[in-house]
Structures are given as structure tokens and as C-alpha cells.
Image (cartoon, rainbow, N blue to C red; front, side, top):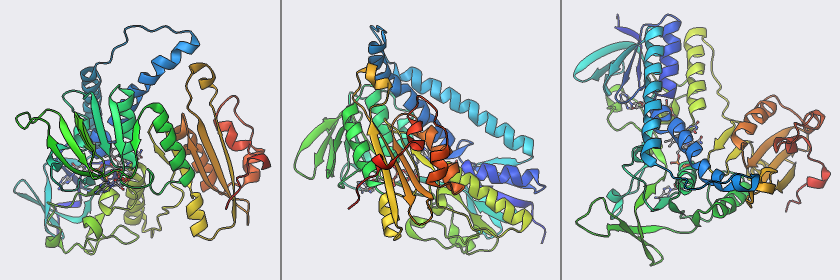
Length: 458
Ligand SMILES: Cc1cc2nc3c(=O)[nH]c(=O)nc-3n(C[C@H](O)[C@H](O)[C@H](O)COP(=O)(O)OP(=O)(O)OC[C@H]3O[C@@H](n4cnc5c(N)ncnc54)[C@H](O)[C@@H]3O)c2cc1C
Ligand SMILES: NC(=O)c1ccc[n+]([C@@H]2O[C@H](COP(=O)([O-])OP(=O)(O)OC[C@H]3O[C@@H](n4cnc5c(N)ncnc54)[C@H](O)[C@@H]3O)[C@@H](O)[C@H]2O)c1
């Protein structure tokens, strides 16, 4: 049977854009349907605008820190609408670049939300399209638990377009988005509380990193409240939908906030796809189940990125797209390696991490040692700031290979990328020791760890 397209991609986000662009450049006839803005979550309501907000909020501390270096600042003011609108302008510029990139590659962009008709056919706004292969790259959407007053909170989606900044905000959650936005709000001068229902923030990260980061967030001015859960929320004035909210916590306390952000996870965005029409199986939270070649239970349908709910990161979605391209064009069987993915949390201070945490290494039964240090970064000797940095290296005693690197402190995200290469390449502690440090930096600590920094493990 002749199909209209070799490939129809649903969703022009991180994974979908890469897959459609490269497939088209290799000769496939490709269409991509996008119901919202080109570039997906990362470009529009994720990584990029978030990082711009982080830069903006870092100035908040920067002005104070500059005094110790001789700068005098008076009458410094922050204007939210300038930041928000400049950010939106930049994002629109990027949307245009994505449109050009797809157009230049020969990809047909179809505006609208797609849904399945069968395993080779999709429908967008009443029009049907057939394709030999269909790729689901629809990403994820915020999950907010349902409770009394849950309609009075916002998700990260809305944070990028707020009419105004509140005086006082509550962020609920303990993952990437919660700590990043708590840092942004705090840096922009909002009185910020971060409430997490568990014992410690950032589940899944190294325990020392979690504890250290949590303390640093407190020092930076965030009111971190652990073991804190919300019971219900109501309007302070029932006639003012946009006014203050009263949060009733489960411990009986109540408090007023101008804004409540729920950052309680993201779930696959499959609701309107009619996956059952194509016989596509889903798992927990609706995640599309795929095999190691990103093939769903329907042979002609593939899925990657956040919709598969494995590792929700842009570079992972992009690498998965490239692996799928290799499978389609080179017949290469995939064994995508989800180990040793470097990642950064753009909180303030930032966290960079790659490889195993101490707890993961223990769970795997590895015989390993840990080098660890924490110190006041040179900048803060004059800034008056009390923040400290943490660095940690895990080394396998069996073969001397570095199996994990973790950092909390300025530039962690930048520093961890290089360490990711070293660990991926199988570098040993001896390789790290043989590397000349860059002085004076924080990063040089990673190549100067000596026996004196060995951590006593229980
Ligand atoms: C606030 C925030 C900050 C983040 N920061 C980072 C970061 O710093 N670093 C990082 O690596 N990752 C970050 N992420 C995660 C990153 O954005 C995602 O992992 C990444 O975008 C996933 O790519 P994807 O291709 O799977 O989906 P997406 O980029 O989400 O793209 C999916 C696209 O599909 C479209 N779509 C959905 N349904 C349909 C349909 N039926 N028809 C047509 N189109 C449809 C959507 O509109 C969207 O454009 C962040 C996420 C958030 C929310
Ligand atoms: N810098 C980055 O690379 C970056 C930044 C943002 C997001 N992301 C990606 O997006 C994903 C989603 O981010 P996220 O922060 O929304 O999710 P997350 O899974 O990292 O964190 C969700 C948090 O919400 C808590 N939670 C869940 N249900 C709850 C409930 N009912 N009540 C209270 N708390 C609840 C969880 O315990 C957890 O702490 C991340 O896992 C990450 O992969 C990456």
C-alpha cells in the first residue's frame, strides 16, 4: 500500500524535531504535527525560558555580593514584565528558527493536535494523513494531585507568563522543577517557601548532595519546609479569584500566599491521542511502552522522549531520536545506554551529577571509596556570602574507575559535562590524578583529591 508519508511525527519538541529533520535529510518524506509552539516543552516552557529566569534571578544575589568587591549600588529595581516579555521575544525568535530548520530539511509542518485513526493513519483537525511509520513524540505534561482548592494553584507552564510576581509564594514538590523555581522566585525578591512532603528534597540524588543542597537553599533565603503536606487551599477573599490564597497544611497550620506553584511531577501527554485505535499499549501513568528500538506494540508506530517516561531530559530525547534514525537507516539494533547521563539542576546553588550516587553504588554491591570535600568558593571570601560548595567522587576499588561525580556549587552544570566524558570513557582515579588542574577554579578539586579527602563510610 502507498502511504502519503514515509514518516509522520506527532509533536515538534526536542525528540520530534530531531527525528523529523534528520529523517527528511536522509530522504524520507516527513510530516510533523504540532498542536502548540515549535520546539516543544524545552524551548517554550522548559529548559530555555527557565535558564533565562535563573540568570535573571542570580543578579538578585549578585548586586549584594558585589559590595565586597567595591561596587556600590543604589536604587536597584527589578521589573518582572521586562524579563517576561524579553524572554517571550527570545522564545518566539527560537520558534522561527525551528520553523526554518524543519522547512529547510523539507519537513512539512502541520499545525494542530494529531490523534490516531489506525496504526498507519492519523487525523489532524478533521483531515487524515497516512504514513508507513508514525512516531509519537508528544512529551509530558504537569501532574497536579486533585484536592480541595487544587484549581487555585499553577504549574510550571503558567510560571512563564505570570501577569505579576507575588510578594509571597509557596512551591510544592521536591524535584528539579520545584527547587529550580524556588531559586528563581527567591532570587527575584519573592518571599519563597518550598514545601516537600518527604524527609529530604531531590529524591534519587546522592544523599550528601540532597542534604547539602537543602542547607544551601535555606542559606540563600528559601524557607525550606520538609515533611510538610498541603491539605486544602481556599481563596482569602472568595470574590477575588486572582487574590491571595490560604493554604491549610496537614499539621493544622494555615498561611496566606500570593502564588502557589505545584511542581509534583510530569506525566505522559497521551490523553487525546486515541492510542487504542492503533493498538498501542501503555504502562504506568499512560507511558507508551517501547522495546529497545523504540517500537511500540504496533510495529509501524514508534515512541521516544518524555512520553515513554524513562529519563525526562532534552538531550536524552535527542539522543533517542538519533538512535532511532540509526535503526531505521542503518538497521542498527539499539541498546540505548541510560547509565552515566550527566545532568544539572539549575537551582541556586546548582547541582551537577553524573554516574552513581553513594546509595546506588551500595545497592549494586560495588566495593568503592569516596573522596569528598566542601569549601567556601574563592568568590565568597570577598562577597560576604556564606555559601559553600560540595564535591564528591566515587571510585571503584576493583578497577580504580571513577563511577560517580557530584557537585553542588557555582557552575556545577558546566563542570559536570566534562566529567561526564571522562566517566563515559572509563577514566580511572589515576587518570584524574594525572590531569593538570585549572587554577584557580573550583573544578580543580576534582583532579586534586588525595587520601586526606577520603570519606569514612559506615
Ligand atoms: C520547567 C521545565 C524545565 C526543564 N528544564 C530542563 C533542563 O534544564 N534540561 C533538560 O534536559 N530538560 C529539562 N526539562 C525537560 C525537557 O523539557 C523534556 O525532557 C523534553 O522537552 C522532552 O522532549 P520530548 O520531545 O519528549 O517532548 P516535548 O519537548 O515536550 O515535545 C512534545 C511536543 O508535542 C506536542 N504535542 C503533544 N500532543 C500532541 C498531539 N496530539 N499532536 C501534535 N502535537 C502534540 C506538544 O505541544 C509539544 O510541543 C524541563 C522541563 C520542564 C517542564
Ligand atoms: N534541569 C533539568 O534538567 C530539569 C529541569 C526541570 C525538569 N526536568 C525534568 O522534568 C522532570 C519533571 O520534573 P518535576 O520536578 O516535575 O518532577 P520530579 O519527578 O523531579 O519531582 C516531582 C516531585 O513532586 C513530589 N510529589 C509527587 N506527587 C506529589 C503529591 N501528590 N504531593 C506532594 N508532592 C508530590 C515528588 O515526591 C517529587 O519530589 C524531571 O524529573 C526532570 O527529568 C529536568
